[in-house]
Length: 404
Image (cartoon, rainbow, N blue to C red; front, side, top):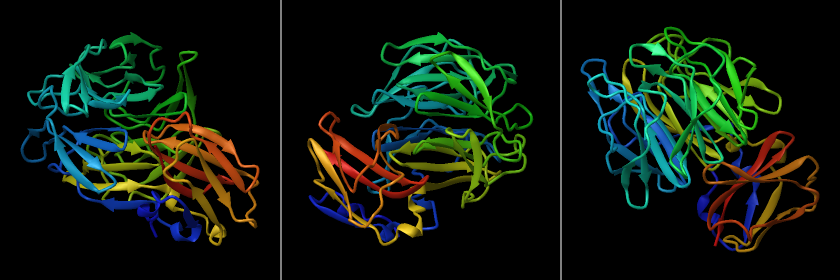
């Protein structure tokens, strides 16, 4: 069963953990608001997600410049202003400092681009920023660490592939080079960040790959880690949420055999483990964004273009051993503090409390030493946050709080 979010905003809330126990981590949501498509672009800002651009090319060749906003609280899509750079597909998308950014990619006439555009959700407008310095390209990746975006790889005009990476500081609209990726050049790879590290892998030119790498911005250093899964893949979907990374779907070569499997990366052990398959039709070019402790994925193609849309929520997969445990979470909304109070019989040994902002960044990580725990919220900005409690590497509780 799902958590009833209507209860969360009461002053004093009682939770029974068996009310959120489930064996599923995927939930189908309302279809994407635009037409079915692939090679789209996605990002999130605060508690809203955005998907747009893309194309279809199975029978006719049609490109898009529309963008749509998703509100998870109402499970609805709203069309926003069209992308300022025109018809485009295979572009990058990311967010930083409360703004969205979209750039690079391929135009309908086949030309590649190196422009970058900023989306302001308050004014619903696009503003062109400084061009990407690595030249015109499509199929690049991006990951964000502390509001700095790291952009690289991809196919450059003329069918060559690149291993160059550049960092972008959105606060001053400035690009600068970083260490080139030391592995094989590629396009249609996957990238995400976990805490202060970036991660990059899979992808290819004619065929997929399994290699996976970590980037440390402090030392400007790439390190190869364990391979992803059991088969080579490119054109896959990836994201990071709740301190773990995820890669799945895609195909073994461009327009090849499509996959539905998904794999979880643990940065503490550097290992991958297979999780529940994506329940939709196997595909390539599915896109994703993260809001709080949930990821959202959708669109893509297997030759037929899709517009279905799914929520990934691993906090639904609660251990049944804690089914009789309850806790109090109050006051909610809060100002300077919030109490987390377990029942007296609950053993808090090996329990960790993590607080996420709505961009999915962990801003607090505390070991629980007693059944009564106080979180200092006085320095938090106003808005929604997600509390997650982990015991022995299993999520046993997840809920949202509102800071006034």
